[in-house]
Amino acid sequence: MLEHMALNMEETVSVILFGIGFTILLLHQNLIKKIMGMNIMDTAVYLFLAAKGYISDRMVPIVVDGIQDVSAYINPVPSGLVLTGIVVSVSTTALMLALTIRLYERYGSLDLDQILLRVKEDERT
Amino acid sequence: MSRKKDNYDQSRWLKFKNWVDGDVDLLAKGMEARVPDGNTDGSGWTHGAQSLEAYEAAQEEELKKLPIFAKGFDPSVDHGLALFRKFYRFLSVLLCGSLILVLLWTVAYLPIFGNAGNPDNNEVSARYIERGLQETGAVNIVTGMILDYRAFDTFGESCVLFIASCCVLVLLRIDASSKDKQTEKRRKEAAYDRLYEPKNDIILQKCACILVPVILIFGIYIVLNGHLSPGGGFSGGAVLGSGLILYLNAFGFQKTERFFTETVYRRTTLCALTFYCLAKSYSFFTGANHLDSGIPLGTPGAILSSGLILPLNICVGLVVACTMYAFYTLFRKGGM
Image 1 (cartoon, rainbow over the protein chains, first blue to last red):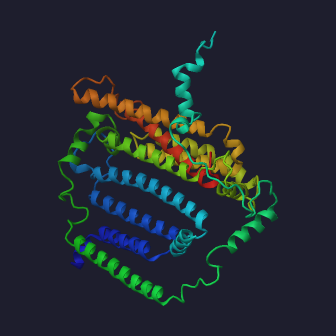
Image 2 (image 1 turned 90 degrees about the horizontal axis):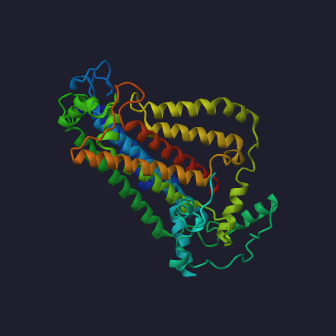
Image 3 (image 1 turned 120 degrees about the horizontal axis):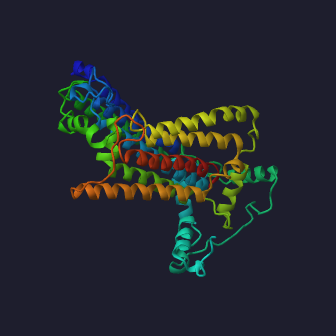
């Protein structure tokens, strides 16, 4: 199992990165750090996809000298998927940051516990 | 010799233009909007307080109201809460550890990295590589894939970006005519946010003078060469947007508002997305009905080649550049 993981180094690293991002998402109370954790998870997914598309000793999928043999280029599909992922993650990050700014303006804190306390206080009054 | 039509006020074009520019309030007649009440209730935010001291004093006043400074708030005293936190931490570490272990176990059964016989290198990617150049005319197979075979997906992506910028606009926009306390406070903060930074920084301005044209030209190059070399609308648009942001940081809003306002943003995005939608609808319609679309593919490798990919790349680049710039201005001062 360990040798296989060493052969699949990129996938292993991306899985560990995903776990780190998920841990940050769960353990940190600060909303900005939660967003960072989310972004680390995104990055791990890109690394995984890019690693899946790679084939050793082959070129990037840009046709040179009219060579159109399958054995000359790497798999172009995961590259397109990574592109989609990056755009969506930029959008969601911007949306999350905007929501965080509004929460901070309303409750004066980035700490999730304090925000919840303030919400309860507001409900009582 | 242009003459305004007699009934220009009633014309469809004017209505459309007003709709694009946002001059009409669509909710004015149909929906009952609740006006937030209570202008100022003595919390320090009067309309005329301009000086920095008044602002800082009021800021401290606000800070004292926070729950951290309130009496009786001490999370360490509450034993139940502390116990719950420990339990929660323990459980989250356990969950994350087991998640990593399960995923690592899966990785151990994945096909070997970089092997040509892996199951994801199937007939789909083979088809893209073997016929991509003839069918799309793009030398860059990835661009040919995302802007021709899977163009509808890319259209959705551009729309996701546009919708995200709309949501950020809804959340962060400061309405100039609004009078309520919260908006008033945000407007003050936006006005004072660059108080401690140097204005008209000469080093930044000189660097920006040299860098901004280079960045913009590089961005345009990436967008226009999307079908020939690595790059395309998304990366080129991001470079263009960053160039605009650098220009804004060096010279301030007065200079950028000469050529980039909210109206320009709306018009550019609407035109780009509409053109993308119409162009791809046309090519999908003709393709699905086995008609000849009549769009020449050109010689592969030339800049004017590969049919619709070049205009679509320009559209995507415009949308991305505008969105990046809009994100920055909204986060900085709540408006464009």
